[in-house]
Length: 323
Image 1 (tube, rainbow, N blue to C red):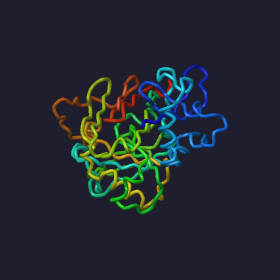
Image 2 (cartoon, rainbow, N blue to C red):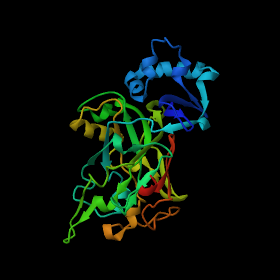
Image 3 (cartoon, rainbow, N blue to C red):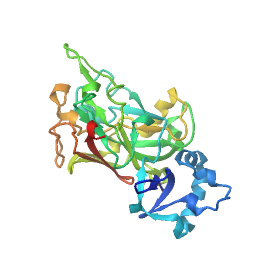
Image 4 (tube, helix red, strand yellow):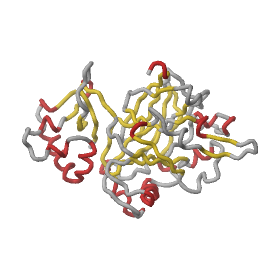
């Protein structure tokens, strides 16, 4: 099942609503249900639906199968927002073998997950703009990542049962201010500043849909690609992760009680703009078929982040003056 958050297109769009993507139509569950239906609260928004667990999924399947024409909207007539606005995005950096090999390494790189946090303030949806703000960064980079949406709460979750806590999966673009993130001392010591470098306005485009976990039984077997202005920059399998999705769920659950609607993002593969920035330790040679970056992202660029079975998350870059 593919879930979206949508509003009606137009100059005065309405309130964001939960919907189900059925081929090229959006099924609106609140429109499909009678006004006094006892289950309406399940479909109030994405978090309410995630919290409802198997009950909500069962109801949704029935609604999709029987929804009248009045509850179906052409995809072309709606605006998709980020499918979920998580209060907390738990982030793992340097989690692909190839990405670690393309750059200067901090002391913990590859030894434990690099742990940082983004918030709902960072999130924008599909086709929303990524803002290039020179007052923050002149080295704006983009990273396509698989995002895990938590469905069941838990603390100290075992790796063996971690995927039982997953509601579904989506795509995130971990937009990064590299000149804020990567610091190199005169002696050549490298460290990462993962606050200002990672968490800022529009630094977490997310979407376009959440795909429920039953449709992705193995999250370590998905093809991931990034295209910038049509050039193929990244292309690999999520099987190249150092720590699997299950291992990351366990890792983050040591610090936090994971709650429904929380999101874990899982790192990016080789092919970022950082990979060719020798000033910051970039040292990547692209594999056949990939196009190495010649610069960081600038206004006018279009980023397309794609993951198999989920779809394409597309976002343009604009200047802060145009925001």
